[in-house]
Length: 390
Figure 1 (cartoon, rainbow, N blue to C red):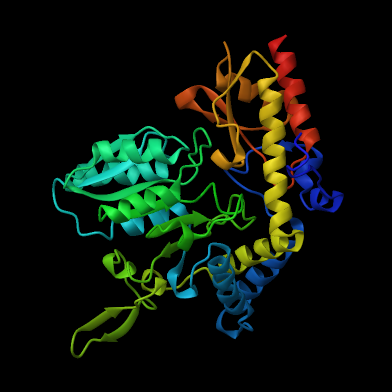
Figure 2 (cartoon, rainbow, N blue to C red):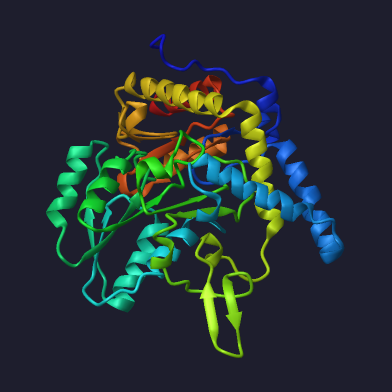
């Protein structure tokens, strides 16, 4: 390995915080992440206090939730009032897709490697509002992606929306170049950051996108049911809230009909909310910050590099994720030549207790290299694959 590249190391205390690792090789954080025991214990305490005491509780869940909002904003280089809490990245995607005033025939550009979180709302927009969706192939290279986008651009195009990291091949799209191009041709931009936040540094302001949606339950060690949405302050008002309730209106008066949403991310938050979940995300962030973001990012990169090197040493495997980490992420996908990926996954799970993700589109296996995984996890994966190859 290049001496200038990050080195592989996982403190034993990190591994000990995830009891499942004693019996299972967990390589699927890209689907569901795991909460470390210290964060989970804090979360369960604060959740129990809220549920047992209601308005008589000490309010620590609310304070921790608002602290989490500040920490999320800092994590992605946003201002606090540009952040809304959601349940997942899909919520954030829908805030944009349902919040724009569409006209029949309007067009959206996306890619051919999107998750259902993007594809299904786009399909629904097409069916219900006649919105035309154009899909382009993915590339980590700025010039290639901009050229592909330019080719399908028309005067009906209004939005460019796609994954920052594609869920199928783990390709890192050139979000900054795409956002710059979109700004120049007067289009809005939305990125799904579900596979980016917590994997490498993300700065929404530097990227220049208008909107960014992500979640807390994958790489950020938060509870399932947590997510966040970023919108540029000057672009938030371009979105009409699909749902409004207590907490989302800055001015509300039934005597004169006033109903003015907040001019911040709060316009998308309403009603009774699961504050303890957002506090739980904060405890997940506590854990990662205790390790140090640089250490987390460096480890994910080093293990990703090691995994790809191991794949390329085997002629029966075909790597379909770009090798350079700058063009990829913590997701690595490969094809086991001559084998059905579902069958491979089943053998890994049932015989070896190794959990991976299948990518049906490519008949491929997807591996997530999380901060708690180590070289031995990867070696065990290849021991199993080599035996299956025979």
